[in-house]
Image 1 (cartoon, rainbow, N blue to C red):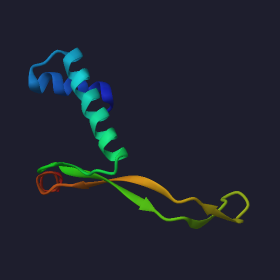
Image 2 (cartoon, rainbow, N blue to C red):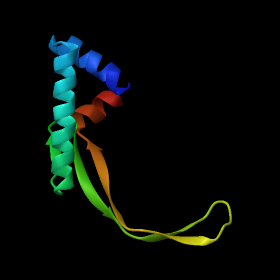
Image 3 (tube, one colour):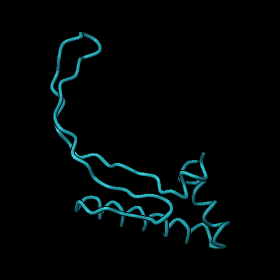
Length: 90
C-alpha cells in the first residue's frame, strides 16, 4: 500500500474527504517525525511503537572491491509491533 492508497483507505474508513485524510496523515507523519527527532518514543497502544536507536560504527566491505570500509555511526528508526497487530498478522 502506498501513501495514496492509504489516504483512500482512511477516507473510506473514517468517512472523511480525501483532502481531510491527507491532512490528517501528513499531520501524523510530521508529529511523529518531530517526536523521533527529539529522541522521544511514539507509542500507539495495540498497534506498535516507533523509537530511535543508535547504531554504532562498524566495519563493512565494499562489494565491488572487497576492501574493508568504515560505516559511520548513526541514529535509526525502529518499529516494534504491538500485541494486537502481531496477533492479527500471524
